Image (tube, rainbow, N blue to C red; front, side):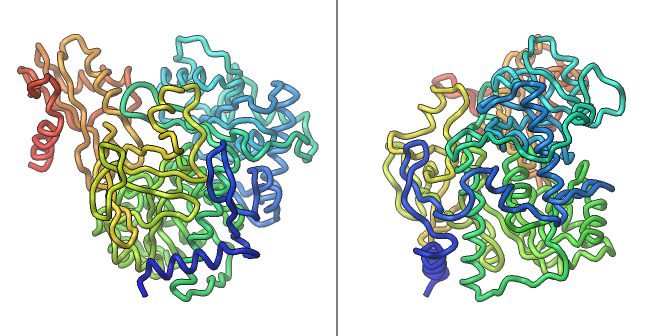
Length: 559
């Protein structure tokens, strides 16, 4: 009997009538899908069902329990209602590092029916202004770095602002000063509904501005239970008993909370597991190793660049990393050699990864343990709460091993892009499938392999960067006549941004980088810049031969 058959049998058993993970037929946004009969239907239910005195957040010398975090969120919710008239459906933006206040503001907002706008903290001032205005955020929680960028915005913004952890006096009210009037730890009575929009996470497309991905409470809680069910099925197939720990399970939060990986797979998935979240101010491999040893970290989820850094640190450090039981991936694929290195570098840790999107609430396919070691190039098999298929250019389903565009549908698929009806019409088929923009194939055993992208994106360490946006910034330079931006393979980050441009005058590279600093967030500025004094190659119909340019750039980068 194949692993695939065993997995299907395990999933069927665990999700059958009367089971904890019983699945029933239902709808979300009018789309037929599978839903969990039991478990939380809203994020507020998730929080309230898992109140305890176990440690929830560790940040440097600060520690908050699950109960203390929720009580603080209740005070923030009261303050938002009283001081800022926040009501159900209002957007509340959060833009800061992974401070405890990020989680508290998110909990407060989603508990009272508000929509948490998880803003990319790497955005430049113009991008911040766009996100605030596009979402219509009524209120913004921002730390000192983001406040400084906000002061550079020269566009009108209607959002009111609350300062978080500013070391200097600011023109904005301080969160903890505002809370001094609110001592009650009772969450306001207003309750969200399962299909109310809970989050807006912004994702970069191949062209234009980032789009706000609107997901409801039930999308998110179903994704969380879907991961749990997959984990239970994996233990059943491999005849593994849940580990008995001498200490609280703990996870290292090193990815940004504005990413679905950070907010969903790390933060929100911790509730039902009663995991301790140990948050890092910024990624630093040696600090990560120290925290793993000190806090007895049991799991770590991050893009390939970070897990690769940790593998290298494990090889050279004398820190005790033996508590680490799983090293998960997301945001960008790993090289097969890194999969083996994870297994070889830690005493107990097994590698895992998956494919998902912001639009799927981070869940899609998953793979881990020996299965991943046996199929290191695969993104795994589909979660039972969703379906995937691969189609040709005519929209017809393709058989196993044939490459085409990957489509997905199910209970975790987002409602739609915020105020973007034309984008929604493009991404959704009439029968509810979502086009992913990924070129993929599925083998005979149901394993998914992502091989290319239809969308013109660079995924740098898990960050989506639209090539069109970078090209537009380059073309603003008065001497640049043509530009082509593309992905260059990178061992650590998966991909780096490369650009080839045609200019009327020779441009000093450092001068060009300074020019781009005023147009793009730092992580979007090309690492590789190649200028030429002749037009870029084009097809007979006038299209730039991007693939040819990219292949030439790869050869230069490797030289």
